[in-house]
Amino acid sequence: MADMEKVEKYRTYIENIINEYGNVKPSYGDVEMQILFDRERNHFQLNSVGWNQDQRIRGCLLHIDLKGSKIWIQHDGTEIGIANELADLGVPKEDIVLAFHAPYKRQYTGFAVA
Image (cartoon, rainbow, N blue to C red; front, side, top):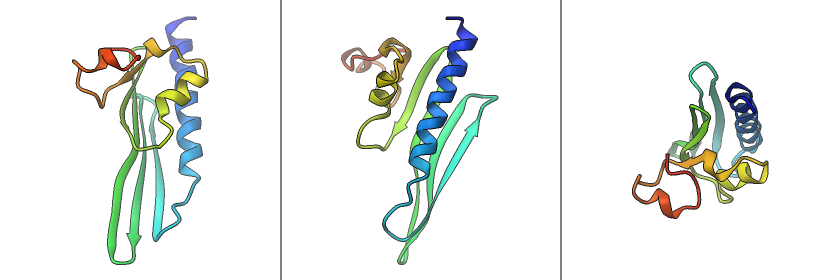
């Protein structure tokens, strides 16, 4: 498969996963899920913004980048793990980088080092 074709397929997978998580409203407070896609620069995020009683809620649930033809998971705040969901879709583990782990630890993850 050509790199551009692979990148487009990976974009679609990432966007579908983020859209699924973004459609789930938290069970607490007045919290909005914000889906942010920058297809031109290959950055994808899911953020939560709002209030739970008098406590401010603001944070990143998912942050994924495409670098070259690899998926770089910068942050994963899910229980299942986005890397596992992508692998279940057929993305080879050597195309998934767990960037939230230090470079020297990535060799032990079962996924790509870089």
